[in-house]
Length: 113
Length: 108
Image (cartoon, rainbow over all chains, first blue to last red; front, side, top):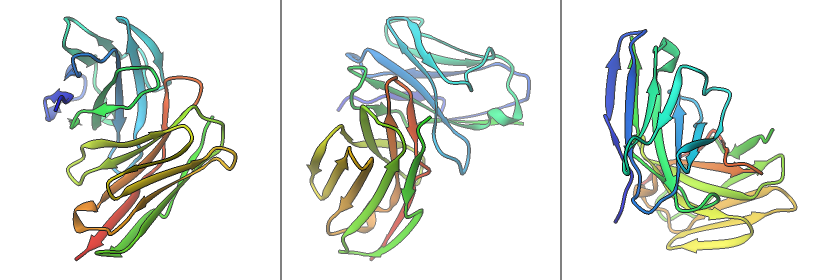
């Protein structure tokens, strides 16, 4: 069964360092998303991406965050200068249509020291 | 801004029991998702509804648009159903608003 894959599963970084989280969405999906979940808190929407551009972003998604689809398969989330409060689980998801079933990856746990 | 409330926050059941988890939201939506988060953290989509009722195996999801309320039912619960169940709603945009989740523990 097709699945969304994310790498790395866990990354530890120093405050101020750049981090790139990678996702491979399901191949025929057109809509891509990043969500985050701080430990013990609810999942929060970060950004949606369609047709090679951001379609919507939350207030969390400030200038230190960026997303891109560098080739036909990968979808990346970059955090330019990590802060302690960026420590969270980051989930990638994809769907065939804009209001469609979401398929999530297993998540990438980011720990900022 | 949509507020999503789930109840109960925690639920412990004996194997075989019928489980109900509730979700209420404050503003009209285009779709509601029920998600399952495993102890390891991964999230699986269970249902997406905009009206009525859906059934998959032992899971049933219902939604009442007028009352802004949805329920997730699990029949004949099993210890492998132990997980966090999350309700999430979508309004007029692509943004999903998530509830805090209901932690379900099913004891053998």
